[in-house]
Length: 231
Image (cartoon, rainbow, N blue to C red; front, side):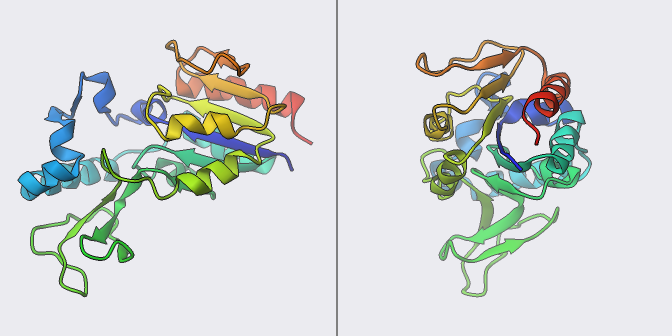
């Protein structure tokens, strides 16, 4: 099977009703993103940050995968599909995708503030002040905040470097280091980008645009891939 690597961003999850701060001028569900997605914000107001992510987790509990998530899952019947997502939801997994790498963490996990290696699956439960790991440190969302390192980026680059087909869906390609993954795509590998908006891509890289929203665009892509690349 050919290896199909897909980089997804907020545009794929917005069709499931999950809002993103980049569509709202720096606000995420009416919160200043730097107050709820930075270590400085956490230091200033831990209770606010925990409440924000508890709300997002509760919202996610009722969200469902959309057509784009389902189409990508179905492509596993024809390709070795690897999804690299900037999203912190679990909608790819809900749709049935088996190989999903979360660059920026995931809402359904918590981790220790004192030992980053202690990570816990919490599902849709809240994290409250006073909830601690076994070493006594406060738990925080297992989310990569602005200014923090992205531990999974090396694995993502390695996956991308083996792509036979590379696809970008619903991301502005301005958030680094994720946006830099296109530089690891092998030169002969075809690159497709699904987004209704103009997205800046490197001038040295040929990219085929599918100017549609994620659901419609992924259906178009699927038909194209099955016709030209599956074997």
